[in-house]
Length: 279
Image (cartoon, rainbow, N blue to C red; front, side, top):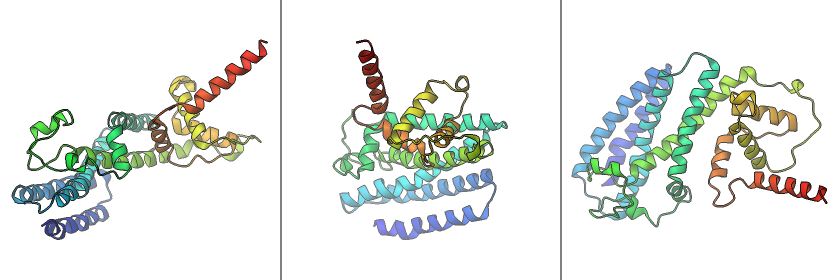
């Protein structure tokens, strides 16, 4: 039964993982130890899974939607951390660019899998039997090609994709903290900008504008960091945009219609002004 693997493996997994996290301070050494540990855990899980028969479809869905993806997600996360740290440049500015490049890749992943991520985030379940059970027949158009090379007893069409979603959420938070730490030394102090202006529109509107300006490369010939630009706007307009503007940008991208809503409003307003002045 599923409770057996929970008691014998998953609880031990969390305990051992915490022990490794508390034992090693070096980031690379810690990541290596955790990767070895998780791969060993997955080997045991694989052996168990090959001979296990789930009593109900609900049990199978629970395993492939809640249990396995959360273990695999940690493996993906720490492999990504190891890769990022091992290839980290020495120069601080290049380090920020290095981290931002990874965030851009994660954003592409989100765009590619937007509908599935919405399905997960909305706690939907109507496709669970299709996504998280090992049926012999599935819709060929919905299957990921990589499933062809995997043992059908060990995976479903979407359990690894869900693990990636979980892992990349953790990775974005980790990278944002790293970027914040790098930018602290060049952060703007309150005395550097004197303004009585206050931003009175929505915060998400300002974030939309900041991303547009950043992508247009209008500051420092495109070399300015998005965090630095954000700090300037926060100080200039006396507003706190919070620590996670990347997550806000993901919300903008996930809009079903009118993704650049604020920019469209600005354009329409300015065009109306020009039109009225001509008459």
